[in-house]
Length: 184
Image (cartoon, rainbow, N blue to C red):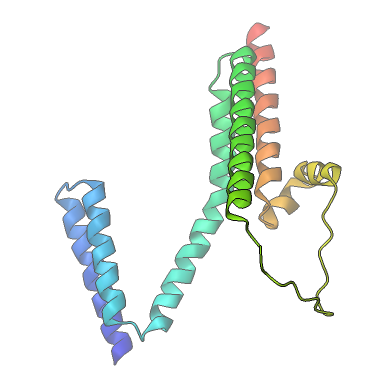
């Protein structure tokens, strides 16, 4: 009986959101109303996790299914919007420089705060015989792991960085070939 009630409450919530959307209300207000309805539904139906688990897991799977194609297409189209490769080089150098600078700043702040707060002081590390420390890969191995050996396999395993690098390489190739086509 409570499963039927959960489905009815969910249907009513969706109907309210659809009605509000048709009234030309701003997206932020629709989001807040949907959040409130979801909160109320969660409080009322806190013991009906099976119904919401199915809906939630389906939603998460659909989102995961779309992430990689969206990343690939957005990178390729963004890079190909540049009219020439000189603009692309300039922006790539700026982006990498900003990334390195912010990484250095974050590292410095982390080390500074860690040293000021004396993190780990007074903690007794006990040697557990079952514990086996994971070997840290060399920098060269980390770098080589970023280069996709098989792009389809990397996508299937959900490795984002090799997919991004593959997309960048495809986009640059398309940009260079596109320039050659226009020059001829």
